Length: 387
Image (cartoon, rainbow, N blue to C red; front, side, top):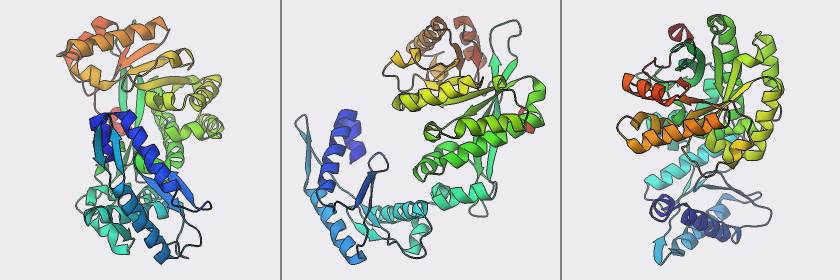
């Protein structure tokens, strides 16, 4: 129902609903209990010294109170529901990531059984999770790290202007993971959208960020550096809170003889804007080391431009949805042109992503966009193929 409220009434209504649900929950729990919002419409509660039977009674009361709550926004009333997964903490419990994964499975089962239910986790619950989502679990992600199931594929970023147009200037490292489940799908590649949200949620993103940085620097030493092209590496939201990351990056650059000016780190616009202070701290630290910085998906969630004067970035990567549609949509073409002009006015070079056709590339050249990336120039491939 949260999504229905968000879609029908807007984000302001969704935010107000979350505040009201939070107030209901706070009023039902003990002061020593730990309540946290862990996702868009997801909350987690840690109750110490609470028998399972008591936890079930409390959970049923939560379901009842939320179902009885009527959310009203601009004269319209919404009925809200909730599904709850309970996980007892036992001697076999490994860590918080395992608990969250089991709670996810229990909650999924509660929804499958008809919603507005409480379900206690059972080992069989994992069988109810769709096969294609199994990689999303904490255990699957840890296995991917431990058994080297992650892979880097590289996609070229090509210059559209300058003395040597259409030359490759950077290779962007893009993360993939090999599907470890089910014989018929084993080895099939899973794209980041299917597993990065879970990695963020279970606190595994910092380890994945470092794996990507280490592996990309290694690939640079093994061949990318010989092409004369730079290396582009994406950083997640978790990187903004990793105080030791600049030192780790510096160590990897030294170990693999990678000059700092030959690497560009990319941070999504939405991540930077929502975490402006830590984003500024990290970007400034990397700039002091001599690295380049790019703001990715620019325009996808644009709400304010004042931060562009604050963040010392080198490149704006224009959101691909505008680029894909620009040949058939004058408004999208106008947005690409406006972002390009604004970037240049601020001394920032521009990159258009999702360039998939000759017509798109020609239009980007006419607009004076500096670089392009997309299937027209090649799909992401392991380094041997990309090179």
